[in-house]
Length: 305
Image 1: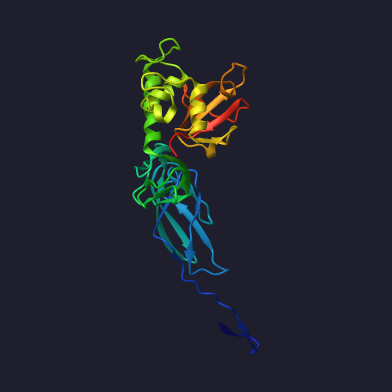
Image 2: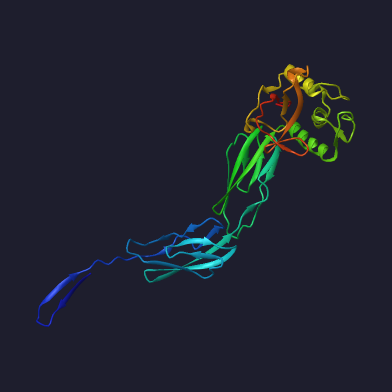
């Protein structure tokens, strides 16, 4: 813009000024932000000289800085107004408070489950991504399907808030053994003398009953469970051993058998205990116990490959 100024003495001078024209517009008329997940509002059509200032209609729901940083306070909706170069723009903000009901699934191959979320808003955006498509896939709606034995992490992003959902997959026979074994210890009593009777178990009898008294798979006879040592020997003779020492939990699968031995008891490898990997970092004991790579682990076997 050029302007000429004439002074009282008749002289005139021309002045030149640059005028920057902006066309401010919010990139989105609605925005969703989760609790504990701040978000910056985005505006198009501004320039380096633009003056922005935002305010919130409900500071109890969401606060907004002058530059447009949203800080959610509680679940609900609010309108934030932006005064930008003399123009007012409005953005409706939805505050969600997403939470995940469960963070773990034990699945047999070809089984599926749906991830359940709570606290979403009407305009919430949820995405899912699997760490291992060969083991488990996940749909846009959060349905997880087991494809092969192994483990996968499903990364869930809900309005900027991230959750990790662990899936451990194994053949159905191994999953069924885990479920049955847990049901046994929930209602039974430990007893070596009464180990084969209903309502009682010891370590090897628990594994034996969990796998349906399958003597071809574990040794012994259909009516009598082998000792932990004899079960381990059967695993070795049938090429079911996957390690002769402890393994990281990431390398285990539900249904794997963990054999412990640290005594001179005259039995195979000095084995005096067997436990089953149950999943989610636990092994099948009463109560469930965390698994770790103990020095007295002498064998890990996988009855069902």
